Length: 303
Image 1 (tube, rainbow, N blue to C red):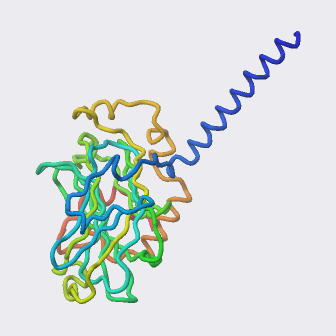
Image 2 (cartoon, helix red, strand yellow):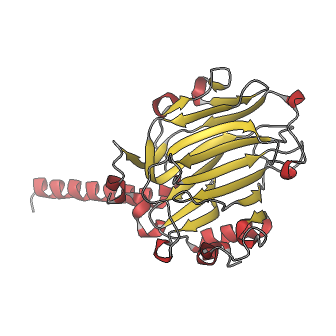
């Protein structure tokens, strides 16, 4: 082998190794991936500039006062991927407020995945309620108390979503799963594109202690702050959801993202055992017959 042949082969090997390492790094860190875009690129305010404030440095504030709630939404919709947002919640007295971050399709048979942050009196923990709608069927609330103060710094709340499983995450900790059990007659969110929405509003009638503690306007304005508006998911173009269903080679379709690994299951069990305060699966007043998916979402029950 002459020098030119050796040098050429060496270059090929180096390129191969670099690509292999990059691929492995992406696969290992894919659940943390996030394609950075500005708020203006991907979102529109749905309330006025006094209540949806777009700030320098990539931050957006939602402001709730006596005059208006606040909200924004994405310009397009998505089907599968990891979709999330950094949020710093209303500080101090926040009782009665609901800061919502959710994914939803339109219509009465819509799909929806919700994070609803329930304010509290000063010094008491924030509640986080999650819910799932599939083909218009909801009523699947779970509620935990957050194990940290979510008003001090940003935390990343996201959904890892593919055709087999949906995982709700706080930073990188799974707090809930919802698996695809369509074969047993349970609808799943696998055929409708969802928009990305955030809002801040008065939920006095239910948010804090089942509505016993109301929003107190003397503490207004209430402000929640958002950042990190990127999306790592399949964009639905011209309503073509089938392209996302059949899309190959995306990281969220890899085998390791079709289920939870042992460390994730352990983390989920800790959240469910230490911080769970309500689960529709155990609410026999609402559901005398336990919904079938409760036993099938075994991660949530095998404590």
